[in-house]
Length: 132
Image 1 (cartoon, rainbow, N blue to C red):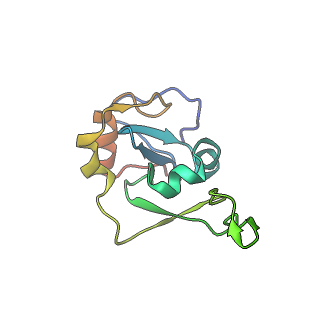
Image 2: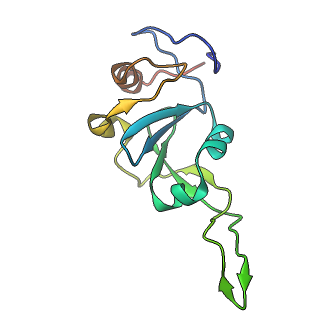
């Protein structure tokens, strides 16, 4: 299994770790994080709720955020916080498009320990390879 901080693998033998998340930003950059814990540290719930950040699982399927612990701070009955609180991600079988179809509109790939190019990402998604 390839861990964060490991040397990137060369094509075509790209192996993706389980639970890795692809993150598509509103600026059309593709970022990759090791897991949900890293994602929740890096991306604020407010941006996720607005749709500025879209998550995909290691197979390129879109994930839907839920906010089970929404911050409902109120004063005199009015909500005083726009912070949706921490989020969780779950597969959405009805969501589309998948990441593979979105890659054409991605402007750049942020540096990460797994992939050196969008072509490597595309190849991994097309073959469905992931860590054993």
